[in-house]
Length: 122
Image (cartoon, rainbow, N blue to C red; front, side):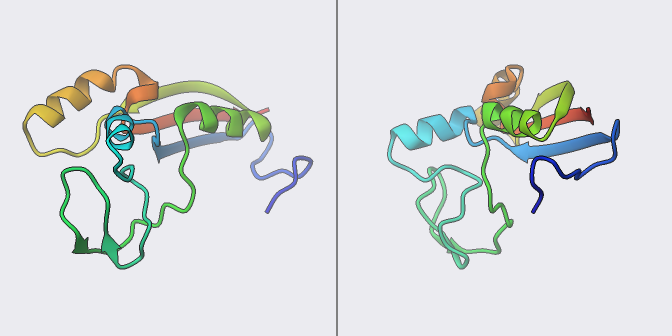
């Protein structure tokens, strides 16, 4: 773990990172209906509480910390990174209405399924 005074990247080094967006438009709908947000894992053995998903055994993806777009921006700023670019990316949907909606909503980074940041250490 790093304190604010320690360096986790070389000065002027670059960071390219992608992270699931807890505030994805579908998570907002799921939470409003009482469902568990996607990318969250309340169990290491079964996938429970998700809108449009069945309860089933699965392997966790390992997301220990979930961020909204705004929270990750603050996180990078706190650790003295300057955000050079950011982009919203839709999730991996095979077809249908969800794929179309996700592509449309991902144009607004804060509503996208995945957020990609390019940042530079100050």
